Length: 517
Image (cartoon, rainbow, N blue to C red):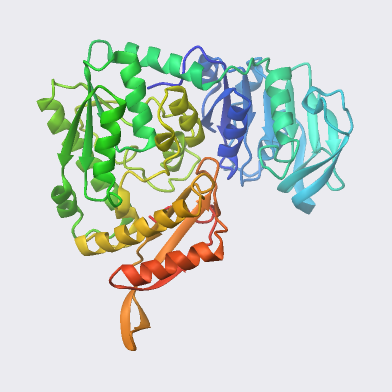
């Protein structure tokens, strides 16, 4: 499924920055649709998309290095407003004739910014003395011809620059991070005052356009929806039902044996109350576990699970009214982490992105492909899904397989499933479900010595992971109250056979990912 049509769009050209996804998030928060595209996207390709504006992202390279990623210089002739951020600011200056060089004094962290031209549209409504977030080793020494300096810092003579006649703007700081308090206002100024965006990217607008696109793509075909009970797949099912009705829609729930405690029963009960649609339950537990036998590499696990899912769907598509399409709840973070752009790294292959076999018969529909998780929740609420579905914690498609380091066995599955149930129960009991993005248990592939009942034990540890996040692109470990951690630890050691130690993961993302595999 393509990006939403008839929607004003801003493109972010990605030069490999850790904050590129945050730029997209902040633009979406201004109710403008935004998509990330690779650095080597041509000006011709960009022109066909008819964006209202272009943002050049940051990046780790130096613009004067021979192999540094560059934008197609023809983008500067398209008549489209451009905002360069950090590396993008330096690149625009470099490509248009300015001077960029290494800084004698690098700037990292909070920095005082002095605005020289408060009438500049980027700084409209802002003070002349601001605090911003810097992270750079190079600087623009002289702006290109036609530009004027609009802001400086103690160490950066061109902290912001503008060419109003061509609607080109550059900032050395990062407006997309929370540490730049005025950043969202600056981005909104660029979008509304410079690009002329209306800001009509809303859940209702998305539902209307998504349903129209689904009808155009599917025609008179039949659709198979893979449902898991989570907000992503339930939202896809609700969108499909609204778009084409229930007669040409079949929902399939595959129990792959890697679910949380009681989840299969809960999904079937919840789903039966929401949609007047045929739901097929497939018990494929033995099949998945057999295929995972002896497999330890996490990427191989994901790909095996993804391929097995598709084979199961294809088999049942033949049985169930000859379905032509497979609809699934792929989100934008899944696409990004699976290596969506040629300058972004593949963090991990998501089973519904990189795990799909090339010879699959069903055509894939991904109506949520360009949404972040919080946007999916907003769409789910717009579609009338109940609160317990809208706010359900994310659960990976490969399930508990990626919460078990090493081989997945029935015994290890039961161990992590029992511990995971305790974690979730205590988070609910403490009233923290709305605050926590995800909370779960992980079983590492090690054992440790302990003492239980005056006897030596050599058993498994359980790692508890709980994070807070806006969209899963970045996350921080949750500061759970000690009494909650104590209850979790005591219960896991006391109730889960084979466990003698509980650890708490206090790593943010980055450098870690939320899931362990």
